[in-house]
Image 1 (cartoon, helix red, strand yellow):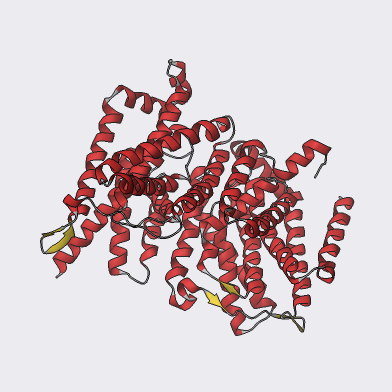
Image 2 (cartoon, each protein chain N blue to C red):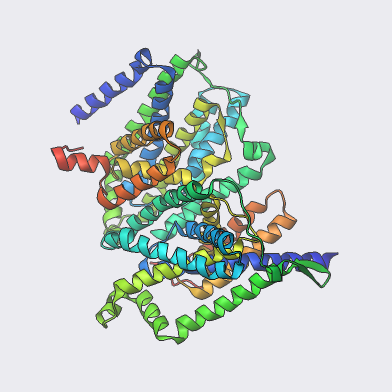
Length: 307
Length: 289
């Protein structure tokens, strides 16, 4: 455990000093990886630990993003930029979770997918949310007297928030609560029989994952300065699922690896060919078929690495 | 004014509902047999529309396209089932669902590659290019054809499933695939056939939809959501549910557009939420868990 925390700290330092020796474009890619990384990690908490495969996780990414976009325009601070988006995402996750956890498996997939598309439908037609153009020109907040419009300070802010979110998820999966989730994944009926209130655990997992996804969405809005209904598209959830699977389901760290692989591959492939979607689709199909453990699974098999 | 408006909208909703039925019945059949929610089902719809376009471009006849396109899409479905889905049958059904998600990207990009990304439309066949006036409402006659065709297909499917030997094999397979295999039915062949048949129905709905809704590569990912809502509302794995769900969602969508223009896209989700709250397994679904 100490080794892991040290490795985590070393990684954080590397990310922190990255802008000193890299240009604007690589830094932007790294920042996207960080944001998509925690989004994918939060999804991994659901699918990898609790066994709830959601195709509607984009709902919380979008809700966090839209809440931040609306509130930051009024008063740009930590409360409007992170705390309230997280709170609104939590409420949304509670409501969607209430409906969705009544079913499981493929029904759960379809319901979560439909709910996220519902938010797409609402934002696409709501004039006060900018309809299909979304909300643009979102200012970055001031935090502890520091104006995050400065690229250097924004980078550190991003790193701290993402780092804390990652540590939070990590502590969740290591906690007794996390072990119960794994138990539910392995055998829900048995956990029920042993006396766990399975539904309550599931909904709490759904809310926790939603909160972190909402923070991811809020950070994304602050990074690019805008948010559009596309954030809610079910294919956004699909891309996050893809990252989790490419990285390795049920490993948390794998989700970040998957996000990195996805974003780097996308930027690399897009500069050579327009056939990015074909390559993405094929990569995904091949991973599901031949490497269900993802990158982490393959590494474990090869060099006996343990995560 | 009210009666013609209402009647016209109801018929529009009916033709849309019938298209959703052709699409969702394939989805529900595949699920019933293989336990897979085929997320690439919308792609079959798109492939059907483009296969139809290509056939019409080559032979200039809509009716030939109506036969050829489903065959092409069915063949694509058969290949997909044999090469990609079959190796996963021993794993969790969720792995297969995820796999079908990858195919959405592949199919959409392939179509972009071959036909380009712009929006195209399929002209209706000459016989149905006009319109008729019923109860004061002017209806494109092609829509009436779609409605009649859809109901004819529903009856044909019902006869196929309830009244033929093949249908009884399918029903047995849906009920208990292992037991059916034990009775000497070659289930792998049935799986491939059902998947191909479901894909062909998806392709068929794509061609039929062509003259009403134009064809573009993202149409597949777009139609999937209403199709999934149909099966959630009607109950997964049920032919009756598929029909009822399609007709309900078709009307909800159309009347939403007419009466609630600012929130029309919400309608179908409200219907879905109400059903899930009252009857999680859908109108005709088997009880869950």
